[in-house]
Image (cartoon, rainbow, N blue to C red; front, side, top):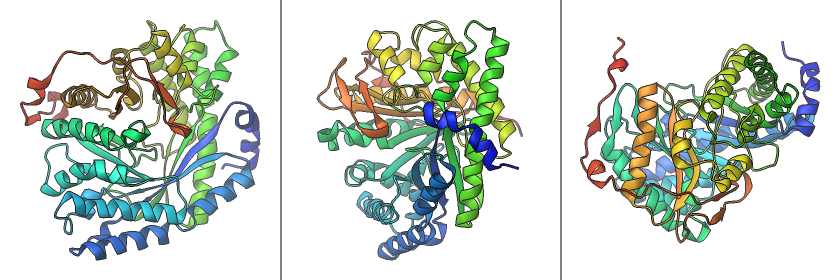
Length: 454
C-alpha cells in the first residue's frame, strides 16, 4: 500500500532537492484510426486523441495540488504513424498532414509534447516508412508539439544501414529547416536501437503495437535527491555508496508509483509502467554529472567516469524494481549534455568529449543525447555517429539512441540556447575524418551471434 505518509516523507526532497515526476505520458493506440482515405484518417486520429486525453492535464494538476508533487510534463504517445498512415499516405507530404493533426490535437488537450511520429525499420523499410522518414524535416519544422523517432536497429535484427544513411541526411535537413531557432527541430528527433514500446520520455516516446488501447506511463526523476543523499556519506566505501543510491531510488520510485496509480484511477485508464530514470534539467542541483562528482570525480569525463556511471545506473534499477512491480521504459541515468548543467561545465572545462560520452553510453540508459555539433558536419559523419551508437545497443542488448543537433552557422566552442527543459549547450568537436565510403555501402549489418537464443 502507498499512502500520504510516504509522500510526506519526501517533502524535503521535493522542496529542496528538485524531486519531481517528470512526466505523465498517456499512450494511445491509433490502430483503429487507419483508413484508406487520408482526410478520414486524420479526422479519426484527432477525435481519438482529444476524446481519450481530454482530462489528462486536469487530472495531472489535481494530483499536483493534492499531494504537493510537481508533475513537470503531461504528454501523449501514439502508435508509430508510419503504420497508421500506411493505407492513406502516398507521399511524404501526405504524412505531414498527419503531423499537423497530431499538433492540433496536442494543442487542444493542452499537453507539452506528443510522440509517435515514428517508424520502426530495424530490418528494412517499406515505402510508407521511407515516406514518413523523408517527411520528418517538414513535419518538425511546421509543428510545435510533435516529436519523432526512428528505430533503425535491434539485437535480433541487426542495423539497417540504409536507414542510418538516410537519417544522417534527414538530421541535416531538419537542422537546416529550423536554423532560425538554432536547429531546434533536431531536439525533437531521436534515432534508436532496441527502442522500448513503453518509454514515457520525449522525444523518443511512442505507443508500441503490443500495448493496450490506452495506458498511463509515468517517468520520475531525482538527480538532486541522489546527490544530496551521497553528500552525507563522503569517503565511505562502495558498499555504503551503493546502498545509499539504492534506498534513495526506492523512495523516488514510490512517489512515481503513487502518481501513476492515482492518474490511472482518476482517468480510468490502465497503469502501464514507472520509468525511474534520473533525468536532469538545466536547474542547478538537478544534474547527473553532479552525482558523478559527488562520487569522487573532478568532472564528468575524468578517468573512472564510466565505472561510476555503471554503478549509479545499476543501483538505481535495483532500488526501483523493489518499489514497483512494473518498471519499464528506459529506467536509469540519462546523460543529455544541454539539459545537465554539470555536463555543460565538464564540456566547457575540456573534461568531456564526444568519444567519452559514447563510452559512457555503454552503461547508461540511453545514448548520445542533446549534443550540439557544428552545422558544417557532413551527413555521412552524422550517420557514422548513429551507426556507432546503434552498434553499442545491438551488441550489448540495450536501448541506445542518438539525438544530435548540427547547429547551422555555429562552430566548436560557441554556445547554443534551446530554452526550457532543453537548456543550452556548447558546440562540441567531431572527429574530422571521413566515413563516407563505409556509409555508402548500404544494406544491413547482421545481428550478433549471441542474438540467436531460440
